[in-house]
Amino acid sequence: MKKKRTLVVLGILIGAIAVAILAVVLLTPWMDRWGATKAEIQATYPGDALLKAPASLVNRAITIHASAGQVYPWIIQLGAGRGGFYSHSWLETYLLNCKLVNADRIHPEWQDLKVGGQVKMCPGSFGPAPYLVAQLTPNRSVVLGHQDKGQWVDIWEFNLIPQPDGTTRLILRTRTMMTGGFWDIIHPGVFIMETGMLQGIRDRAEALQDKQYPTGIDVLHRSDIPSTNQRHGANHAIREKISYPFRRCR
Image (tube, rainbow, N blue to C red; front, side, top):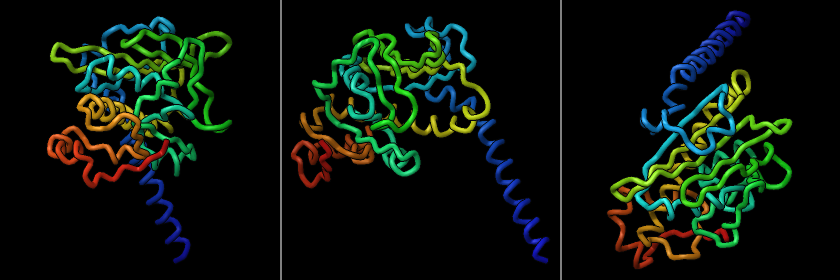
């Protein structure tokens, strides 16, 4: 009886793993083009030339109701020990053991990013190798990446495309030589973090553009920042600073 029960539990576990793998396989094409249009996926961006024939290509995009010039400073200050990555603090802290502080204001002292500089993923010596700054085009693109023996093997592009209606499309493109194995395992987690970051950048840029956050205020968690729909119903209360739960972090 005990052996039979063990086999049943093992069978359920194997089945659950098989379903999870199948789900990831089926969802990967959607995850790899989340929010991006066909034209955006087919477009050429400044960082593409650094890695012309990647083994894997991912495009994710979001519309931001702010100008490119109002979005760019948030991207420039990305990184551990700087503005963080504006994503899911609970995932960064408790699952990845990467205790980032996600800022909610533009810091002048973090606007000095230069080509050849580094953008760290986690504080201290923990975590993956820092990104190298490959290209900077003010108010248009930030290109980060990793090199191996002097050759780019991983490119992370933030491209800002102004729209006729005054909004901005933020296209996040990853070009990498990583495929299979470990890449397949972390792929869903990367999707969660990157979409959270895109939404975090959007919420911060739109909040500042709407002048709903006073300069100099930081909020620790992205959940404290009202979404686009929530803000339209709460403008007066925020402007008057009535009972809004700011949690100061810097």
